[in-house]
Image (tube, rainbow, N blue to C red; front, side, top):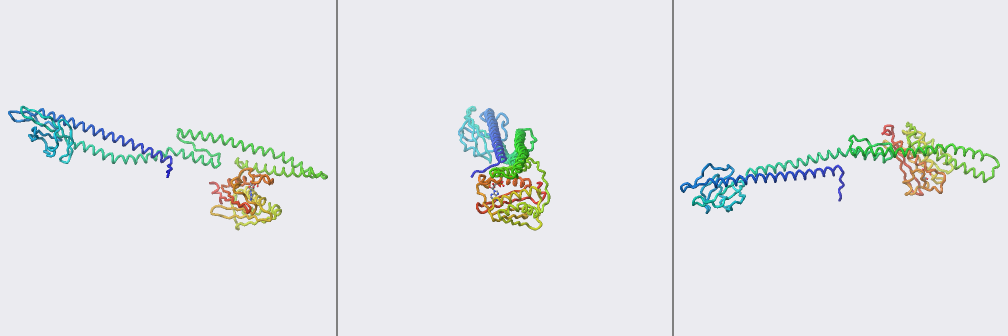
Length: 455
Ligand code: ADP
């Protein structure tokens, strides 16, 4: 199993690991150095003591004496023995254990005695007059051991505390330094959802992240400008085409009205008029979409009567419904209202019900229902028509997408794009369910209140 760590945790772990390594290495070095220096000091003091003791032994009239005071510190002791090992004199407490430690001239050894450790150093055989003697000096390692054990204790207590502090500090630093990145991600997320006007909040620090934010924002401005230019071109082109198409249609209609036209010419004029009508519809829809996306549509949100809306749509489409002998059932709870823009909501319902008629079967049924679901209003348009193939479903809201464009010339492929835009400006959602051959259901969900829409 691979554990996916966040950048913040990774940074903290590396930081803590580095602190652990540094502190441990530093503590070990300090400990070893202290141990070395203390041992060196004790060794040289023991060596000095041995030399001094040896130098002060005298044989006065057959009596072995010391010339001076005992020259060594009270944490040390010495023994003077005859060559065979029998003790002649000693300073300090007698520790019998040392008798068992074999003599090895000029070599340091450590022995245990009296609950502490001692550093032993033996002299070689010394001849004073006729006496052959040996001297042994023992220096206490207690101070060294105490210093080292205190150091160990300090390390054992302070290293975990230091680690904890570095962990908390690391978390804090990582969180702080990653905050601008989080802002960049959030900003980029909003832009990815289609809001090209969104910008990443400028970072306060003038560091690499601040530069990255500026660069991204500059890039977004240029992308937005290009995008707006494209939209404006579509909108300007549609606008420019409106008049010529209207003129062509008007001339074609007046020609068609003349009497005695040859049948071929009449049929050609009918085609011209039908195509002009289709073109006018495309132009009108393109203008709605581009105006909407440029934010030039003056949205007017008000409380609308659900029933009045549905009846208006049923009335507009009565002729088309009758043509295909389709029955439209409207199912709305009494007094249902919704907050929306009236003309956009009418356009949305017209598009959905018109599609249901267009792709519905002759003599079929269309069901228009709405109701409140929590703090949303849900509108459903269901038909029992040809349905939509599964693979086409993700594309039907795209501009100019039509499932069967070759066979059907009546559509423009823009109706559902307009539905999607209307839903978006109302902060709602639209979903579709379909079974080819059985029918299609479109479900629109809109927030039920101006406060929610403003969010
Ligand atoms: P059009 O003007 O072609 O209807 P739309 O954008 O309204 O354009 O719809 C896109 C495509 O989605 C249509 O061409 C059609 O193939 C399919 N479609 C839309 N509504 C329905 C429906 N109720 N039943 C079956 N197919 C539908």
